[in-house]
Image (cartoon, rainbow, N blue to C red; front, side, top):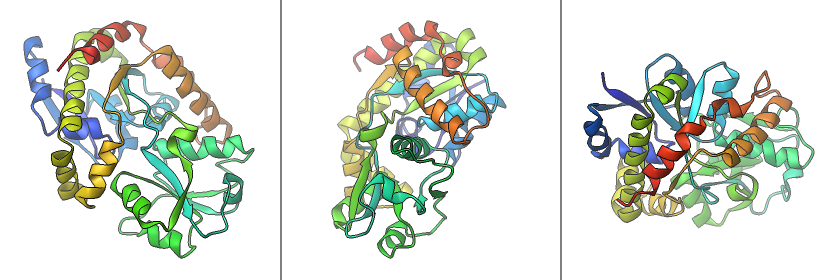
Length: 301
């Protein structure tokens, strides 16, 4: 049976890996084949791992925490380097919101359940405000123009990423109230089921190698990668080039230091009621994976 990786557009490493041959090449010496399961909502990754639809997935920082809170027995496999310029909380440049505290009582558009929830919740928490009580967090609806809504005062803030953020930065109408790197490390996070990781660490390492190779390909072929994203996801190739150039394209093993980052997020989520029970992130840390994954992501392409 093929080793199945989950793919959605919000995880760039997996998105590009699914368009390259590296997974098959790395799994072949182990007698395995690879497959990709495409889906649109990265927040479903935990449930897709739990029900066996996929064997390995990747998201931002929030979905693994919510998956643990839902009782899914997952294990962290690898993480990206920090992504300080991956996203930003935008406000009108000439508007009334000058500080995070000024968001109180307003509506902020973000991808709820993604790393963007971590960003907003932590930024508010640092100002003594609550994600649950002091702002109205809403998901972007299909077809909505968030730049227009922010420009016209329908919302007070918008967390943007990718080509949309690059386009917003070019326009000059918006100000970055919070840059991702000001508040969180904002790593891509890769995880799997405990049984899979414990039984097949060599497969996890092979997947990490394939991801590392895909990252290296993107870093070396930014114009081509940007053109792919523009054709497939919308936006201009110019904006995608800017967005992709701002990512580190480097993987690391999931270490105790990373677990501490995630624990801080989990504690904030529980405090504001985003998750309904406390989570011990260390339960998802399998130290035996660190050495093979570190070797896999350190090798030259």
